[in-house]
Length: 550
Image 1: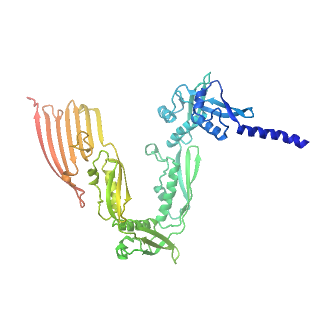
Image 2: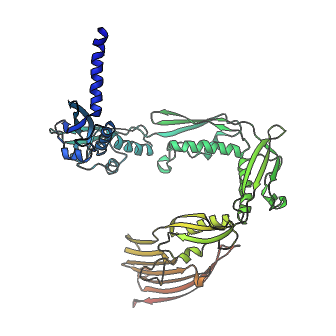
């Protein structure tokens, strides 16, 4: 009897829950907590459950997520109420976020201007606000303070509701505290390398009296991992191949930061033997000049890597771009010595196919192509390809240059693609000033670094350079015009024209001076001695006028 009394309520609950999961939704009710109500049509527009649908728990979760995503509600819940065994009511219980009534009030910001802080908050009048939103927004302010040494800065906020709880004022309170800075960097276990030597190679530096100018002492956590790696590399370059540098220990005392690097140096190794294997295309004698390490030398990991790179470049500049080297370092018979072996996989000879340049909307294809150091039909030269990237970047026409190889139907051919992104190459400057000699003076200057003299109407894309400047004052006049063609007659020969007109009224009280000048210049880059040779021819006319009778 007692068992029946216990099971009866449990069975009733089970049947009730089971009936809810199989019931249909008869109606949807929207209930708002707080003084401000919400529009039912707005809620239904963002929800998927409709009257007549069978109750679906997954659909309820989706509706809750959809309403939260509108960013208008600080509380969202859905309740199910049984009407009869086959039907339920769904009740959406919501609480609206108040809307920002006015621009947030900022208190305590001295190091960072209020305009900067408002930009970080990115809040506009009428935006919904609550504590979760302000927690995210103010974290950006804290990050900005950390960048400026203020690691002890604290940011709090308050939301002040109006009487209807529909709108709210937000007050941001900032306690900046003192600046944080790295006051000391110490090392343990560095028996063979001095602490001063290690400090010199670190990205992180300690604070000094000039830190407000040179930013020394800035603490950046991401730099510490780079510092740990660079210490390891420094030791390995000195032959300590087993070195281990632990993650640095950081101690914070209010606004002062102390960093400790723990180092296990290990033994210092020398080279016993160095060998090449797998090279059949180029013999040992050809590759021997690249083996800069000899038996008895310190086993520097940097020099070992340089040897590998040099041998790879030897192959890849001669068409064997799929050459790979497996470098192994093993313990030799003698203590603290190692054998270094370079095992080559040479690959096959590859030639350059087509060369394509993409993204040069304004710059002519020929202007970029003439600067390349790789050519179709030649043996593929990978180092020259990388140098071509740098040459295109140095033109000043592109913000980025990326090259890659593209397979073709022929196994011994690879196309080359250069993806470039153009950047603005024109400049306009204007200014004014005053000096005791020139008195009032103003200037205007126009320049274009990717000019096209004959490319009307855009006048861009031929790689020419033009500059025009006018400087006018009460006692002087300067007019200048210059033009440079870096590939004159389609040769690596520059041709330049310079014209100027100058008037001076301050050289003497008895006369004024006028100078009119013009010059042409031919220049050619050189590979030896001087980097460039220029030949210049100019004419200048000097006139004296307004001569005083005295």
